[in-house]
Length: 112
Ligand code: AMP
Image (cartoon, rainbow, N blue to C red; front, side, top):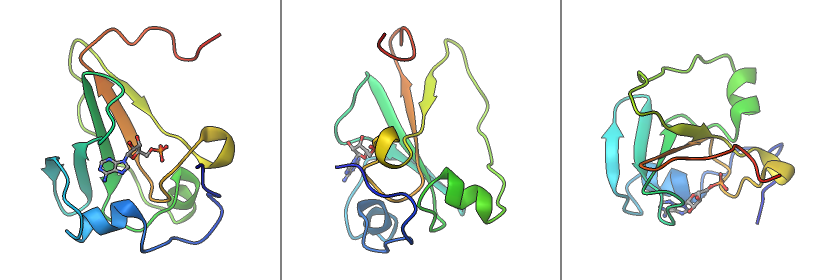
């Protein structure tokens, strides 16, 4: 179910539990600021979630509190980043995250 992204951060959300090590994940990368791990229900051959270690509900929350994203470099043959926000964006987990899809041709951005 999509969440209300205007609500305060819920420290019991599934990604908060993964960050605290209470729930396992298939980790790809971790540093002081970010964690990347494989999505449990992949929508492409490669489907990775990238989340900040900080407690932000959404990109709006993140932007409002004045932090700057630290980006990884882009590599050939390309991939897709996607962020869901709130009800219409169909965000299900109330911890800021971006989906990274790769490993196949992604096709058009949205179904027509
Ligand atoms: P969103 O709809 O953008 O909030 O996406 C949440 C994503 O989290 C979905 O793609 C889920 O498959 C994924 N997800 C939920 N629980 C877990 C988990 N325990 N480990 C990895 N991915 C998860």
